[in-house]
Length: 620
Image 1 (spheres, rainbow, N blue to C red):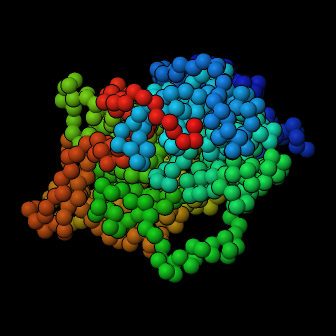
Image 2: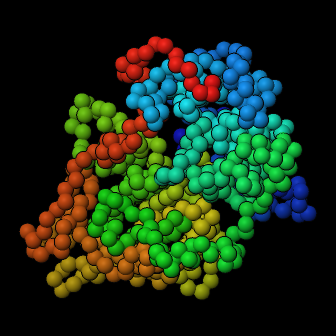
């Protein structure tokens, strides 16, 4: 075996497990157990993964070549010049950081072109503190910080964790938010500490793409100690780390009344910071809570009610009657060829645009992948490219969006629910997926211990299927969309098919009971419209049961466009056509200063260099 799912194997069977066996002892926990010889590890050689039923860990069987080696990142010029001006040294001393740590971390100083601050209209050259980022001793990126608190990373460089080399291979990793916080932790003698390159934000989904190439260090660590900033963005980052790597592995730090580790260092000193970091706190137990854990939300409920859930913002008719929360299942049914997959594609792409969700498709219905990808691209573009000239910047923006937000789960030897969920678990760690689509239910069977299912085999099988899905979505806070064809397709006297319900699906009663939500997709060929309906909405604040709403399918783009009002006859309705390129439209709405800070091409902004003199910045 040379590759799995397109990933080339660099080193085969890194744990030296008996080749080809389905069960073995766990290399992580068996040696420490009384039952050392119990075969608690379930091995899936075709997916390259194994899972221990005792410690719950997912183990990667092989070492893979890094696909991202093909990306041509830019490498900043850097020289090991650590002589700092008195102003910079004094500034760090004011933050409790010694020259010893500055030299250890190779902190530099120099002139760099920086984006404008809130009081400036143009960027300019400024004196900056320069934080170099290394991997295996080689420079990868540089963070520039000016005295007016403007920041910039080297354009085109790979984004990665700060102080990566000091966490590689460590069983315990401390995570803080910002380079000064890393230095503060190192001041108290703890060096296995890192920081994200850009911190976290209040808006949207937490972006952890900078973890992708180095995620194995976090997966293999026994403890991840989270000491991110104690504000809303920091809490968002903490929650996302816990979601990805599990409450059993993540621990919290009590920073008392301080915002971050550097503030704590200044307020209480090195020894106290070291003690509070080492006396980290376990995450509260799952599925156990008391009233005080919810008191604030309960009081808010009485005043404001429960907030609406996640909506598409591209399918207003659906949004009026349906929304969803993370960690829930949506069943989508409908007669074959009525457009279920098209609906699911549009819903999930809309979530990706509006919430920065990452989506994984396990979709035998949409193979080969090239056909599925072209459908997704058309939806984003609002059109079909006719010739090579249409592969322009707008088209490439759609391609980049798909690359960053969509992953396909393939199965050369047939799909298996347990293997798909195992792969999805790995994608939570590596990509941070928020949505898993299983399309359709009957082509992704549960192949586990079906012999143990007794009684009504269909109902018991369906219940077991949903139990596995519920366990996955609850543990990782992921939305699972399950597409199911009805087995009963009943006709009216007119010859038209009746609109199916949950009970027209095989095992329908269990599907209804164990799913949070149900949607039906049905085409009215006489009207030329697509009807959607809510078969089940579990919670009242998320929508309403048994509502119907209408869309017009646009063949070229594959989009479902809103029908205004109830359709009356063939011509008795209006359509809210949408031909915009969604990604271009989304990017145009992005704050321009934010675009500048992250992506601006300085060659296109030479007019900003209208004053060659370097102005003095405070404090350095």
